[in-house]
Structure formats: C-alpha cells, structure tokens
Image 1 (cartoon, rainbow, N blue to C red):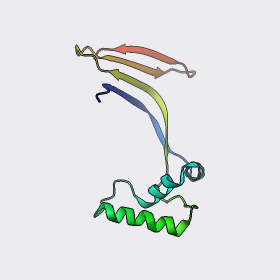
Image 2: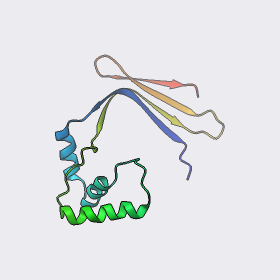
Image 3: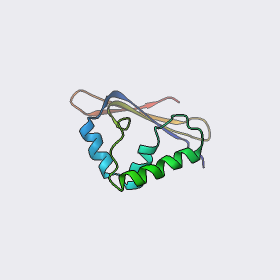
Image 4: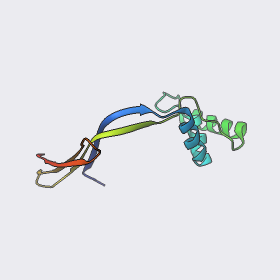
Length: 113
C-alpha cells in the first residue's frame, strides 16, 4: 500500500547511556531480546539457518535472562525542526515544517513542494 508520507527530523543526536539501554532492553519481550542478541544488525550472514541456529543456542544458554549485547543501544534526538510531507495526486504536495524557537515554542511554516 502506498502511504505517500514522510517525516524528517533534524537536531542533535546523542547516544543514550548504558544504564538506559540496559533498562529498555530488560523491558523488551524475551523473543525480542533473543533476536537482538542473535543478530548484529546489518552484518553479513551466510544463511538464515545460521541466524536461527544462533537464536536457539542463545535460548538454551540464557534460559530467559538474556544480557544486552554490547553492540545494542539507542540514540536520542533533540529535535530542532520536524518536517512533514504528504503526497497529493496533483503533485502540489503538502509540506509543513515546525522549527523550535528560543524558549521552547515551535514555529509552523508551510513550504512549497
């Protein structure tokens, strides 16, 4: 299905702390924790069978208490601007940009497509 929508967020990015990553990881469902531990995202793997074997090995090894992998963590974005784009059939698409102002308020601007 065609959505015809985009969102672009611009701002300062920082890595979250190990403590925040640990807390979030512990709150994820068991299958999500196992999958994260079994898969270093975007690493090349020889086959799906290898990935599934790694998942089963971790399932037996940790019995529900899966530690957060060192490569797993998160980032925080402090947005300075957020732009929304919405497809229109006539190609006069809608673009709206919110820009953070001093004091924390937001300015809304309509942009030409």
